[in-house]
Image (cartoon, rainbow, N blue to C red; front, side):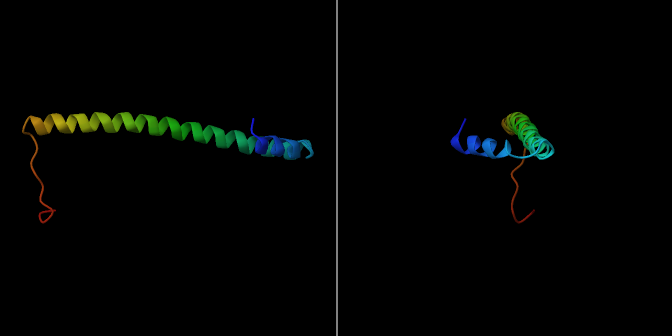
Length: 72
């Protein structure tokens, strides 16, 4: 545990139970959100890799065409 976290916990221990529970809930929600975002980004990287592989296969099979910025 880091010194900063130890300091925070030391201060939290001086608060009443309701305030401790409120802060603990906030921390747990933040950790859960962080885990959800990590999982979403992990899945999105896999999806992007799959899409890139599919695009390369189509390109090598001649199923794509070059786009010109003037046409877009």
